[in-house]
Length: 221
Image 1: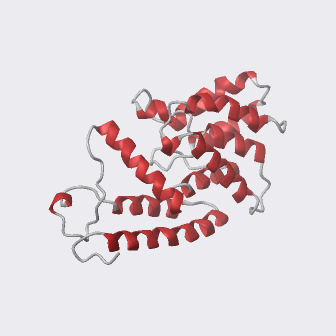
Image 2: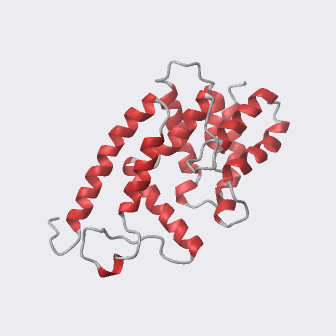
Image 3: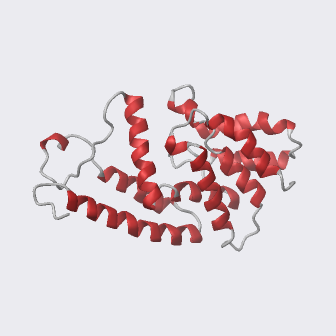
């Protein structure tokens, strides 16, 4: 694998992110790349870092199409699309198959296959860590906005079930973000990711304690 592989993957990926919304744009892909390489440095197994970085840049190229309903599964679609993109990039069949495996297995949805390669596990973990902590809360709130747009209605409201609010009695509230972050924390595969996830989870807990303190008739903040 040439050292330019990940740079070429980035160049190929960027046009696909032009129509992406903030939760799944090129900045998210860049953070996932950085996180994945950070985790890789703390893993004993041999890591193909160029392959890992390339997969990080490419993992969400199908998100804009999934958002508009043109495709059903951005991971599977990306794996097929990358077959064509990299088919003319002098990439071996073995390397191409490895990247495609990373893309097909990076999603937390139940229909996504389990990652087997260490690079796929690291990509999965880095993607999930970007939804835990300070950045994660912002991203998950943005995802609520995306889902509201797709459904044509409010997917969740900025409120909390502990507050006496008639308006939120039958609606999802901000605790949904905590649930999503917790789901991703428990799904992490690698020990370095689990350590970092535990640290980021502390901020999530503190955030929601502060959140509850700012709303309701007995608010203290």
